[in-house]
Image 1 (cartoon, rainbow, N blue to C red):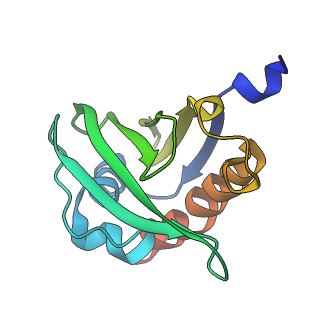
Image 2 (tube, rainbow, N blue to C red; image 1 turned 30 degrees about the horizontal axis):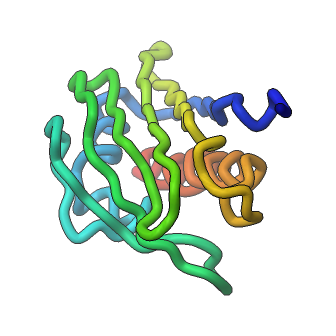
Amino acid sequence: METSKTQPVVVEKSYNAPVGKVWEALTDNDKMKQWYFVLPEFKPEVGFEFEFMGGDPNGEQYLHKCVVKEVVPGKKLAYSWRYDGYAGDSLVTFELFEEGAGSRVRVTHAGLDTFPAIEAFASKNFNMGWNAILGESLKEFVERA
């Protein structure tokens, strides 16, 4: 078995924005819609279930089904992430760290090896996706004046 497939995807980015502002971006649905996915509803409460459509902007879209697993206000948010109609269940964990007046976010997406071995669920796609989401979308949103 190929070990690279079982490794979680881990992406870390630093922001010129305080932890509180980044936490709000990660947990306030009105703010999430501006940089993340459009969720019908989201609450940072353990057990809260949410879903959203996502995938290749020019191709296949997948219904993501998630359940909030852990909430440590201002520090950590974790939720399960699976695809409707497909085997597998993964865990996305956001961790926030103060860095002077700024902050750093680490996202760990574990359990990707539980998904079917199809191109859309390849580890490299999650790596590219999280790098774009954290490195571009979230960064631009939280660093805006």
